[in-house]
Image 1 (cartoon, rainbow, N blue to C red):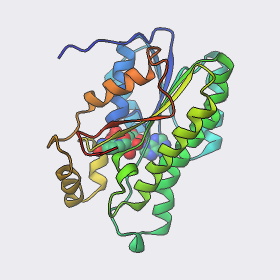
Image 2 (cartoon, rainbow, N blue to C red; image 1 turned 30 degrees about the vertical axis):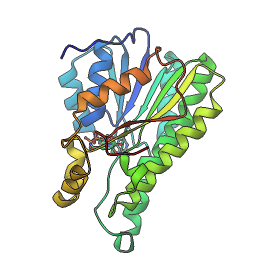
Image 3 (tube, protein in one colour; image 1 turned 90 degrees about the vertical axis):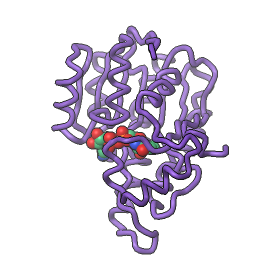
Length: 250
Ligand SMILES: NC(=O)c1ccc[n+]([C@@H]2O[C@H](COP(=O)([O-])OP(=O)(O)OC[C@H]3O[C@@H](n4cnc5c(N)ncnc54)[C@H](O)[C@@H]3O)[C@@H](O)[C@H]2O)c1
């Protein structure tokens, strides 16, 4: 299928968790569409791989832990010295272990919520003031069907992603009188490295719930994120866009 590229000329995008998986594919398509892209990821080795593969002068990167507010703020301050930030894709995430709530390691539970939910809050908290100053912004928060349905043996992940949906609805309304859109997306399972963090049985159970009967392709996901991040999205905000192959009923 021939893909139409979006017009991201003169736009600067930060993509968290952009070193691989969904984030990497979004970075690739944004660059093809003329954006300046900054990848924020915790994994320096994977960042270096991504930078080498994408080989684009409009790409830069920072090693950063999105769950650490000070790191996020320091990095934001450096960037806004020379640039505006037009697009933020809050995509960094982990699933954590597959375990019942009563057997879940407490520190691991907190870590999952810290990265998925607090990480999204931290990036919005640091970057939104720059968007307000420029009266322009498109924020896409990557949630999950788990945040709508609640997956068994994934309480931390389901809570974190449900929180991302609530945060999106709240922040979207706070910014609705400005040219800033904040939306969430809820993908079903896609074959990225994140699946390695879960048991095979858990992944199979997730897949069995998808009426389309297959995994989501990363490129299909990127298409939705591109439209939500574009200037063409002038009205939708504080909303949740489903991309679960028919799994979610709302
Ligand atoms: N792949 C799926 O099946 C699926 C389904 C629903 C939702 N999601 C969500 O999509 C997003 C992207 O996942 P993916 O499938 O591409 O996974 P992935 O593991 O391929 O990529 C996630 C990236 O986030 C980075 N990251 C992890 N912790 C970080 C931190 N503290 N700070 C900065 N970066 C960090 C990782 O280094 C990695 O590069 C995640 O939020 C995930 O929860 C994925």
